[in-house]
Image (cartoon, rainbow, N blue to C red; front, side):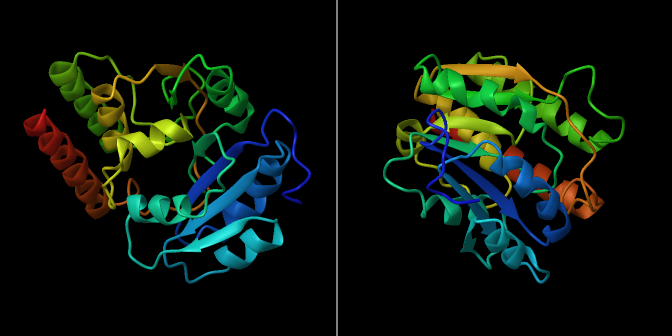
Length: 237
């Protein structure tokens, strides 16, 4: 993919993908993502030991190295490479679980100035069996319930597939560098009174084993960071 050959609708959209040893998945995902001819594709390489960085470069993407482990750390590292002309930032996982056919439904409301944050919620009836573990489903439901109790907005998911206006992303000042990244973004969006939309999407089983939801230890760690992030903002507002 050549970054200069972009579709006019998406030339000001950048995709950020945090990744840790996702070479196998990225070989399939990046060509599909390239068909949208986005302005930038940036992979936050979270200390991969496989060919992740090589695969990204082979497909015209930019690699942002971040050896410090953590979903938020990888996203933050990638954000530092955003061009000044980028208006919309799209976040998605590097494991090929997100349904890219719905990418326009996430970015167009922002480009048309109809929303500031659009979240893909994994609650469509077509979500593949086994794509979400029990602990992921339980954790999501608990987190969105707590946010509704505190801030009065009914989120349906903490789905990683989402788009946000660049100005809004700068405004909410993301601080999490671990696994509270998605929930912090949603809380800060409410605190800053952003215009929020939610889109039910199909969700697939990931390629390879999840480093978070695929293990008990990873699930506990992620759950801790999500709940501690909610607690920190709960007290602050």
